[in-house]
Image (cartoon, rainbow, N blue to C red; front, side):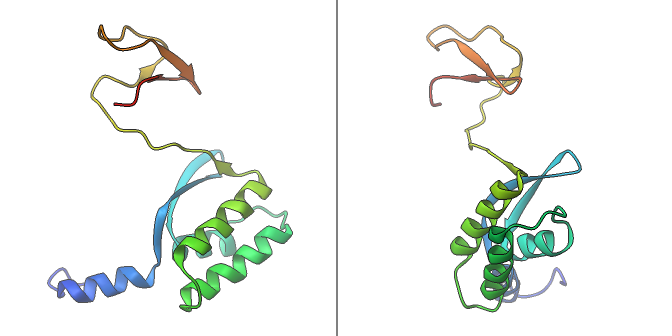
Length: 130
């Protein structure tokens, strides 16, 4: 898309992709972020594991319906997440606010006034919400 394209044109094109909140899935041992119904449809049609369960078949149809404008991106996201869970490739992610120095590998000293950190999946997280 040309950079000089009008903002409304760029916005309409992005809407065609049906963006949604990121979903992380595994592909060849690496986490991949899926951020739209379009990306999810490409992934489920071209890069899905060989085992194809009923939720994957349903998600495939829902994703294509979403791209055709027949359902919302939120519905497509739920279907994709359920199919990924069924296939064992869904990566549970919880968004957290970034604060410089608040994330590190292992346990580290936390500034006074904060609670201790704990290790989850090799990354120290503060117990308190920032």
